[in-house]
Length: 129
Image (cartoon, rainbow, N blue to C red; front, top):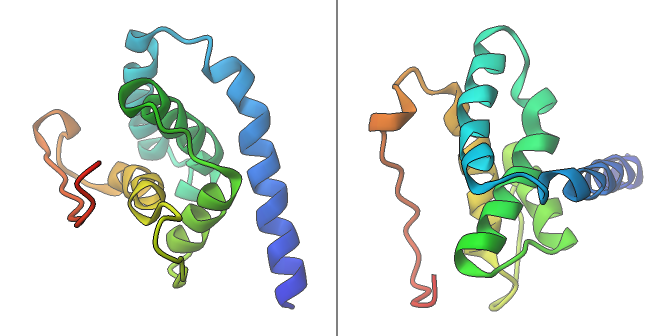
């Protein structure tokens, strides 16, 4: 039921949080190279669901370093919901745009295009982001 789903997602959020201690030790260059690593792993047969925890942890760290915004647990939760193709309702100010970066980055691994020549747009009315 719904309670089990929430618990499963919370367990995934907890696991993503546990990765943060190692991800934040990576250099900027190592962090950026993770994208190619994830794409290679996907091409070798790892599923997006398998790659989700580490990808979300890397996206969180990149956001922290580049725009000084760290995804909160509820935003990670929302990103998982969106990746699953479900709708996540969030109030003004709860970080919808930041949430969207998580499944967008994860699902971009499934694109056949070379990521180095690919541009991805997230449209937002948020002037801060």
